[in-house]
Amino acid sequence: MTQRGKTRDGVDPAVLERAWVYLNAVAERPSAAMWDAIDTYGPVEAVERIRTRNLRSDPVLDRQTEARAETIDPGELLHRAAEAGARFIHPGRPDWPEYALSALDRPRVLRDRLGSEGSDDNGRRKKVAAELATLSLIPTGLWVRGGPAELALVSAPVLAIVGTRSASQYGRSVAGELAAAAVGVDAIVLSGGALGIDVAAHNAALAAGGETAAVLARGVDQFYPSANAGTLSRAAESAGVLSEYPPGTGVTRYRFLDRNRLIAALSGATVVVEAAARSGALSTARWAGALERPIAAVPGSIHSRGSVGCNALIRDHRAIAITSAAEVTGLIPAHRGPYPHETRDAPVSRADSAYSGSGQPTPFDGLDDSQRRVFEAMSGSRWRRPEELVADSGMPLRSIRSVLGGLFAEGLVERREGMWRRCRTKPTAVQTSLTF
Image 1: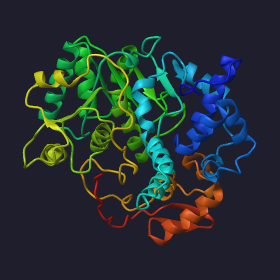
Image 2 (image 1 turned 60 degrees about the vertical axis):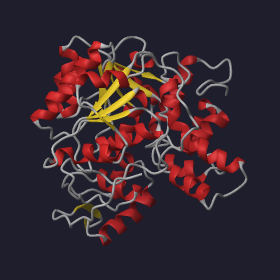
Image 3 (image 1 turned 135 degrees about the horizontal axis):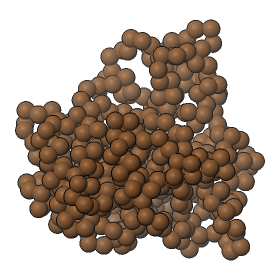
């Protein structure tokens, strides 16, 4: 394929759309294995191979798609999206944000470059290949609710404004000033639709008569959090509400972290207004840095826990300090065009453990990707059979049973008559770092 998503001539557009919808929903993440198959066979044949389990040459993709291979109904997902006023866009379409998102393929570029050089580089290629198994790359589609017919983020200048959900009055005020300044130079304000800094930025952009867009960590058929439904409805009427997750997908902590890479990639620059030591906003900044997009942070009091992350970004020279709203306008590229792809190695590890807005340790600390997905699927106190966790976790039953045993040994889940649930008394978690 000469350009990502282009396929052989003669494919019915409706067939092609359904193929991309299937690929979008069948795996929890758009992994390197998924994109290798798409690039090798094209999306339509890749779907057929996944459905018929003709993946003997790719055991990684086989594992990643096994749980949902026979349950995905593209027509039903498109119908649910239409009912919510949403549409599906995919690679190869004119409104696909190719320039912005293609930089997310850097880990595969790095893997292939190391392989072509013929040296192991002290085991680095093996490490990259191992990390790629759980790293989200370019999304295989985006679900868009509202917005103009052609996605505005494709060509317009975009500024991401992110930060803690537990925002101070100072943080909300600064987020509003920055959003208004961005609107003043005709930039779209992009954020995640969350409480705190996100919603302050969205509301300020709308109040200033500008455009704003939100990227959700769940399906766009239901706005989350519900407290921000009004703001998200207005964002949908503006530049749109987006998600890589199909309708009906719920919220999990790791989906927030995966979502943050899209905010960074779709933006020309990112500003972190307030962030605790382990705030998820720092993972957005981390991705922005890896993609070589400008990063700025608002300095705060040394006594404020909500400013620890921002102050650290500035101290470590990973972000410039923003001391006035006017300064942020100089960060925003005036137009969208090709971004560099190979000048810096992209991160090959996921944004660390699930985070808490307070920066305090959580029960998710120290869990690997499989453990986190199963533990997230067990949200609430209801007893559940392992079979009930397949769809939500996107993992095959045999793997879930193995993971449950490990979580049981860690004291995180309990068992009764073949059913499982999270322990009501959570053990003390060990805090981990959030660094590259």
